[in-house]
Image (cartoon, rainbow, N blue to C red; front, side, top):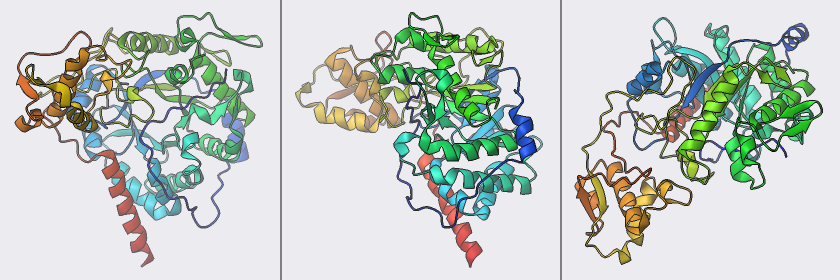
Length: 501
């Protein structure tokens, strides 16, 4: 079986296809530096962090989320963008931060050092310093080499990193903040781990990238998703996705692989070795298991996978190609459910959180950080305890259009095959859809009308694992991600125009 897997994180958006004028900058580390770094294995205690995404209809206050992180002793967090409210909330928290740059901003950042200076000044320098946010990494793009992107971001990555590195130097931050590029596991492939190699069309750019990382003391960041391997391949052995042993081990010479994570990780190690960087430190940027929205996505499987992963990584046993050398850090995907994400990859995309959207733990999980189970978010401000359901006396024969309206606006993914609300019956489906829309509209009375087919109830209609949510009152988390990166691009383009005048 091949070890690459497709795992898009965010909705795909159009980007300029034209290449930047002028030849791309090639970054090659100094020979002596490369020899020193590539001959060493960076050994450190593995740390468990989380990805904090904000693509949600019901957003907690950033300060509430930061308190949730602190209460669970989570000391590392990865952000997909530089959200001002989130970064302000993290100031003074002591939590180490990786700040992401959306792929759509890479073209502008690669074309001008002034644009990179502006981004660093607005999104990094503003928040660091005494009492500020502890920003350790900047993630330049997110899975920019993904096969489904058809090379639209590929040529921008290294030039953007060069400009950003120079900006960090000018801001006196380069010695502390490192640039990385989170890569999807589909960047490399093999029939067995020891044969691992980057995709042929990526060999040149990966050589440039790992040379840059090595020269600047940065790790290689990779996203690994055994769930997606299982979801996308009916022949993939289910027990191989977990960490409790398998009846389908992969034999690779003298090495035996009993789980997909080790096999995938060592495929990357082999690919890096072919470029001369077999000892480069590796960080797992994303890994996890969804709890809803697909067959195999449930609370039990998510708990077993994540707990097995944490135990496996923190044991410091490493992998066959890196014995006793686990990944530097592992960022679970994800902290919270994100009910507004694209469902293009699958309905499960909205259900990766170890906490539900309101910061309530979905299952018992020991992160190895001092607590045997997760602690819930405190002081969450909910809307009143009321729900919108189908009127028992209503004629539901004409409800289809209302259902479509509700589900196009709100999140109904749990109603689909494999979802936790799939078996609650027709009237239950209607009620769930109505309530999702009603809560999204902040319980506006008119939003539960549906031409007389809906009614408000004060009795919780939740059934078993099917939870009818009540919204939270806070909506202060600012612009949506799309709006933020558009505004960022506009500011950068304005700066470029101003410099040319």
